[in-house]
Structures are given as C-alpha cells and as structure tokens.
Image 1 (cartoon, helix red, strand yellow):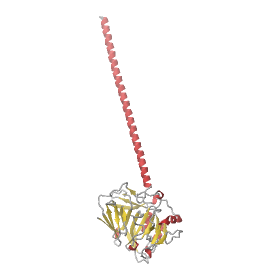
Image 2 (cartoon, helix red, strand yellow; image 1 turned 45 degrees about the vertical axis):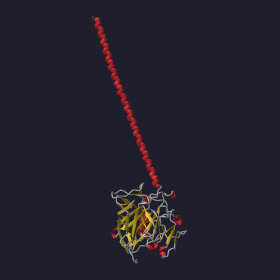
Image 3 (cartoon, rainbow, N blue to C red; image 1 turned 90 degrees about the vertical axis):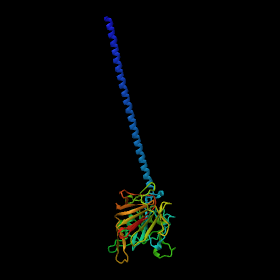
Image 4 (cartoon, rainbow, N blue to C red; image 1 turned 135 degrees about the horizontal axis):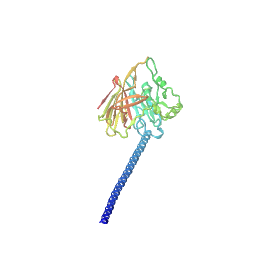
Amino acid sequence: MKKTTVKKLSIAGLLAALLLSSLVLADFIKKERILREEEEAALRAKEEAERIAAEKEAARLAAEEAKRKAEEDRRTRNPLTGLKMKETAIGKRPVAFMVENTPPARPQWGMDDVNYSPDIILEAEVEGGITRTMWLFADFTSLPELIGPMRSARPPYVRFSELFDAIYIHWGQSDSAGSYIGASDIIARDGVDNINQLQYRGNVQLFGRNWERDVATEHTGVVYTDKLVQAIDEYGYRTERNNDRFTSFEFTDEAVPVSDTPCKEITITVSDRSWVKHWTYSDADKLYHTEDFENKLTRKNIIVLYDQTEYITKPGAYFSYCNYQMIAGDGKLASEGTVTDITWEVEKGKLVIRDPEGEVIALNRGKTYIAWISENLGGSVVIN
C-alpha cells in the first residue's frame, strides 16, 4: 500500500513538474514572442522614421534645387519684363532715354513693336499740359537703330530713372531758378550717370538729327544707338547693375488675371491739362493696344501711379513745370483683361507696388506702360 502511494505521489509530482515546466515554457515563449514583436515594431518604427527623414531630406533638397533654379531663372531674365534676355546683358544696368511726345514728334523713332520697343514706357507731364516719355531698356546693347526725338531732362524723370539704377540719356536739361530746382542740380546732387547731348564731347557720333520729317528742328534730335556702348565706355560709367539701388519686379510663372474685375478698355488722363491715352485689350494676343502714339504699340501690363503734383513757375519762364512728390500713392494695374487697385511707394530708393492686401504684386511677364498721373490736378482713369 505504501509503495503504491509513493508511486502515485511520484507520478503526481512528475505531472506537476511537467505542468509547471509547460507553464514556464509557455510564459517564456510568450515573453520571447512579445520581445520579438517589440523588436520588430521598433525596427519598423526605425525604418519608418528613416523613410520619413529621407523623404524630408529629399523634399528639402528638391526645394533647394527648385529655389536655385528659380533664382537662376530670375537672374537670366530681363528684370524689367520677366522675359528671357541674352547672356551678355545679364546683371547689366538699364538705360533711360528722354523722348518727346508732342504731335510733331509722333510716331517716335524706336517705339514700334516691329523692332525692339522699350521694356518700360513711362509717361508723365512736363509742363503746360505736355507729357513726355522716358523709355527704359534692360539691355543697352540691343536697341532700336534710332531713338527719338530726344528732349531735355526734368527732375521727376531723373529721379524715376534712379529707381532703376539707369544710365540717363537726354538732350539738354532744365536749370534751377528762383524756387525751382532744375534737373541739372538733381543730376549733380545725386551723382546720376548721364549723357547729355549739349555737353557730349565724345569721339563717336552718338547724337544727330533726322530730317526725314517736315517738322521744326526741336523735333529731330535722335540717338544713334550703335554708338552707345562706346559712349558709355568713354565716360567710364559702371555697367554692372547695383541691385541695392534697382527696382526688381516680381513676375508670375504663367500669365494670370489680376482680379475678377474686367478691363477691356482703359482711358488715362495724366492731368486736366494733358492728353488722353486709350488702351484696348485684345483677347487674341492677350495684350493692350493703343495708337495714340501714332503707331501700333502693345503692352502686357498697364500701371497707373497716382501722385501729388504742383506747378512751379521759375523766373523768366512763360510756363509752369510739373513737379511730382514721388513718395507714395494709390493706383491701378491692368493685365490679362482685368484690373485691380494697387498702392505704391518709394522704399529705400526702389519702387514697390502692392496689392489691396499689402502683398508685393507679381506682374505678368511682358512689357509695361506706366502712366504717372496727377491725382490732385485732374489725373483720372476710366475703366470699361
């Protein structure tokens, strides 16, 4: 009996031991499985983190490359139009020409789109209700054969040319007298690099007269542009652009409307004493057209700058010069058959144009006409 009991106890112990061992083994296996799952989860987490990091790095590198390409693309484009320009002109200073706009002067030499018309045409009043234009070209080695009729400098135009670090080219200038500060003093005060026909003593025939029209002598002065590079070299003027003194417009990648407000026609009056400009939008070429310069001229962007002006009569003059404050104001921008309100200001020597929300405006790529009008002396804009 005792042997049987002992035997049973031994079997029971063995079974208990086996049960305990199986429980321990199961617990071990479970722990091993959990540990393996944790290791696998950690590995997956590490791989996911590495994947995310790699994607972020790839995105960063792609963004840097896109930025580099955008900067390179911008560097190689015409800073006045956003269009491509030849490599030799990249980083060079623009040139600004003072060109007459009275009826006997029209059509001006060098304004037509068949040849290389100006990148920017600025129109403003000079005196007696007469407007004058200033033409800006980003590449002074690619110009129309003739530019003119050339006329004399006025302070507002000199100051406007400075916003673009331009070499300023003119035929004469207004002088100071009484309370009137003339262009000659502005040029001297600001150290403006300029070429004045009345003072030019260079070795090349930069200036001349074109007699093909039956008009008075003052409407015949021209610049022979193939001599301009030599003339600039004679003066020793800097030709590399100083970006700290240069208005660099932003441009869109693709042409876009500037608002939801249609603008099929825009009529601009510079002052209540001056001429009117009519621009009509064409859906065919997406450009604004005018024949008010007595040629067929097109522009991608029409900019109106409202400014405060005053008329100043200097001793001995029979007319009053129109002087612009050139500080800040409102305005309009028309492009792609639409129009929007803008604000503008001269900030650290540069022209800054903003949209109604205060953001710097990006222009559509193309050539621009700027009407600098007298808000307080009858300047107006009519939109159809």
